[in-house]
Length: 123
Image 1 (cartoon, rainbow, N blue to C red):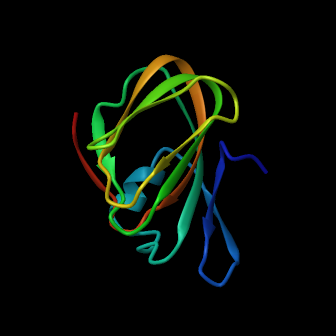
Image 2: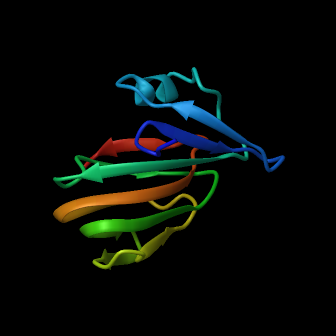
Image 3: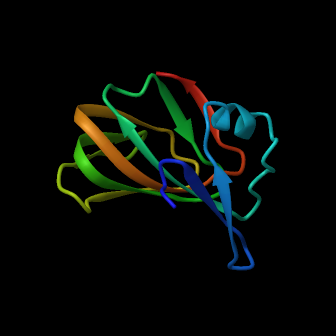
């Protein structure tokens, strides 16, 4: 198994569901085809080589983002900025906080996200 090809749903009963990742994954999530993630977390692994073109927020739970490699700055609306520059650095994104990221160098991160109701807006 690899988090590049299989994300994980952490369910309220402490069970885990594997979710196959393909080019349509985020479209399927957005369309509700994978459920609403009520009281569930999504564990993902993503790489970035440019700034995020959007802001997002998770109105129903907190998020943890952990740096695997690279350097990135998380911008948390109303809170400030958090630079992640060493493997293992993490940012805590409180429930309902709009956030985006500025990529200083190609970056890989692990996300643990309360996905229910996630919202996006252009940066």
